[in-house]
Image 1 (tube, rainbow, N blue to C red):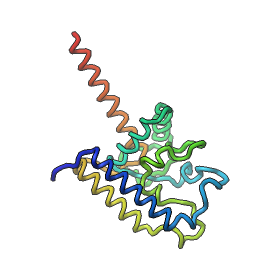
Image 2 (tube, one colour; image 1 turned 90 degrees about the horizontal axis):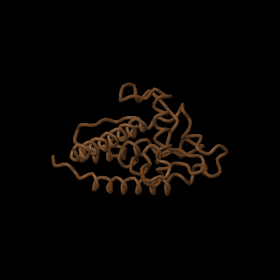
Image 3 (cartoon, rainbow, N blue to C red; image 1 turned 180 degrees about the vertical axis):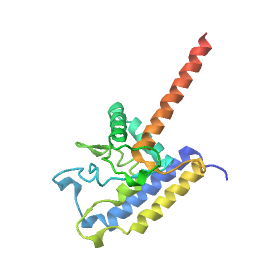
Image 4 (cartoon, rainbow, N blue to C red; image 1 turned 135 degrees about the vertical axis):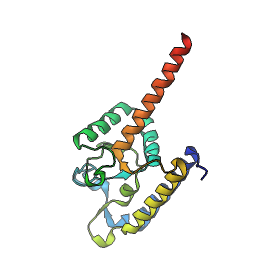
Length: 191
């Protein structure tokens, strides 16, 4: 199988998510409570007993790029690392059994990747009072399968679903290591 270029895959992923956000907003969110009127803004994102969002590597790349474009990038990565430590998030082992507070929520802003990388479960979620108003679970599963397919087309089979903070930390570590490797090569060429 010929792999899809990451840049092209990220464009397709953004379109998929943007279309899905529009669909959920137009067909379901009118029955949900408005986040702007919530007494405790971000309560659902910061509920450590509730959040259990797993993402693919491709989604992690998308989110990582959105984080890197921020002014407070260091603070965000610090929150990611604290989340991993506090909630004992590791790789895929028991990952789906663990919950955590999302490190990508900022009180004055909300979700810092809302427009550029919000994961499918987060797009689906809203504060619905009636169960009948919630988007059917099959919609989320269908979109996650589309994301998984796109991820596989980009990275092959060498990846796994991981908790969001774990993937972000992995990419940050890889980026820092790659940056150090490049610096070491430059330093060696000066010798």
